Amino acid sequence: MITPEEIALARHAIDHSLALGAQKVRVTLNKSLMELVGTLDGQIDKVSHCLDRSLTIALFVEGRYGSFSINRMEEAVLDAFLERAVDTVRMLASDACRDLPDPARKATDAVTGDELGLYDPAYASLDIPRRREMALGASIYAARKAAGESDFTLLSEEGEYSDSIFDSVVIDSEGLFCRHRETSFEYGVEMTVEDASGNRYSGYWWDAAPFLKDLQIGTCCATALERAAAQIGPQPHPGGSCILVVQSECASKLVTPLLNALGGYALQQKNSFLDGSLGKRLFPEGFTLTEACRTPGQTGSRLFDSEGVATQETPIIEDGVVRRYFLNTYIAAKLGMEPTVEDAICPAILPWIVPGHGPVRHNQDEILRLCGEGILVTGFNGGNSNSSTGDFSYGIEGFAFQDGKILHPVREMLMTGNFLTLWNNLLAAGCDARACSARQIPTLAFKNVDISS
Image (tube, rainbow, N blue to C red):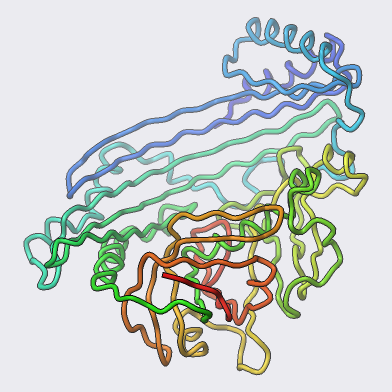
């Protein structure tokens, strides 16, 4: 997708910046194209085409740093832009912590962009009629309306099919060249139903894959409708302390705050409840959260970060011990620590279960049976968390269960607590993470969670 001419222009930007007085330069060239077809109640509702291209230049000039972006790719325009950019950087305050990464840390195995096998040649053969056909073919609205339902009425079906291609090249003045290219095919749908009393409920489901042949588009509407109808007839549930099983579809809500707290900017600003945690066992023994960013064919995998630093498949939390902060070159220098990579790319929780309760490979149904009684969380509704203390308060919805079986829906409940306490009450992590998600987070179960209605 990125042309040789565009790469040549990126190299020219480096050469011209050096000629203008920059000591070091990094250029990032990104290009993406997305096609989308939206449907409403089985009819085409919208069609969109989005093409984006940008050239971002990081300039290191006389101990000063600035980052600039442009999307005009004519050489004369770029030269004038760079002249103004270099002059601007010279007016900034000096910062000794700004630098390119150590060359030994940079990626050398991302040359073609296709090393991870995330580009589907079938993308090039898609046209608008085929995209319309897939979007309309996924709909079940007309058939459901004709058949009717005994306990609910189908009000609406809103679906979106999209496909995209993303191409990125990172080059710097010290010889770095790395490239990443991937395609993505996605379908998502929201179904809204109404019960006999006029109460409305919505259910959503989606699927995504880097290869068109792997996209499970045909079952999305039926799954979304099932999830909507399952919410009919919610019943009150007593508050207190109980077991919470969190569905894999939404479990990353409880993982993201951990990753953010291990991020360099939060640590440097003293805005992290995991500050000073490196090398300490703060989580249950046996619990492992790892980085799986180099898995071929896995959505979201990358061989390098935004600085061109090579990624690593390495534990983030291993056997309960914090093993990794996410520190780019700048933040690491500010903290006086060794740099790693800028962010978690494809975090994955390994299957785990509290000792003494059988084998570790469990899906949601097996975890419900293991836990016996509690609440299965299928969605979060608002709420917030304090990144400094780890305290949180989230609205939840889902189902009460007993003896491992679903009893009835529950809504408008609140879970509160602290993330360190929550994770130390972990009972199980399943083996059912969805392949379509970059974050491989399975069903999770926690004990002693405070909830209120």
